[in-house]
Image (cartoon, rainbow, N blue to C red; front, side, top):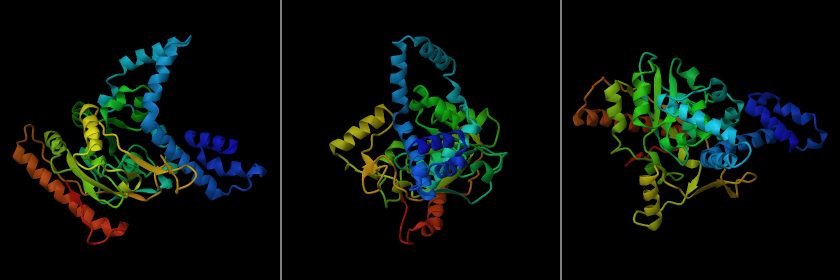
Length: 361
């Protein structure tokens, strides 16, 4: 266990290549082979992100409040002062760290599923883009790995393009979590933030929006290919106002990572979920993955199902300062058709049949 912990600390520092050699130095761990050590490191890498996503913000808030009540209160006070000064940074695209995005831990994260990023067309650095990511899944694992890290080589596949993964704005009000997210190039999915990135940050920017949001996450279950998109037109209007090209993105396997209890419309469970979605911004899902030691047990570790993200062909959008509803509807329809074609073209390559259809709600 000490060896695994020491090895994982190397993973976080980006020195994960020395992990396996450490095992050979301990005769007592001869029962561990290369594949087992790699698998444990992959699981730990995924679990640390899941726990960070679910609990880091709340846990750090509680710790900060506790520190205020101790002799170390000055540390908490200094951090809060920094928080006030730095409050608007997320709305200006955040503070990405190339070092963090290239951590070895993300490569283990990628290999657990595994996650792949497929490029279908070149993107011009002289343009800005809005990527529409589908489907949401429970946690958008493919979106994070592909666009919040360099594990799948997004910067190499799209040279000159800087991705900004947009997520719930409330996350950036929580201490430490906000800084962790920003280090990966993650920003709030707010109008002010997107406007800033697309108008005051030069070109070559790609804002990645998980269009279906919380509503879509409530219906994601293994084997179902459905997106919430028919009435989601705000991202098209923003694209028109900034002349940013629209790019449909579909992740095959995103819905396979967790199993969820889906409450029927009109049930008390769905009522609670919608109330949370309306007032808090997210919908609490009742879901489970597998346990740390066995895929046959229940836990928070996602199932090891392949996730392949296909980045489709960009749709050229003209800059229109005051787009009409007709303009928005026109490009929204083009986007719908492009997403449908993208799904149909690639579905049979990832275990689906010709008869499988993309359900657009």
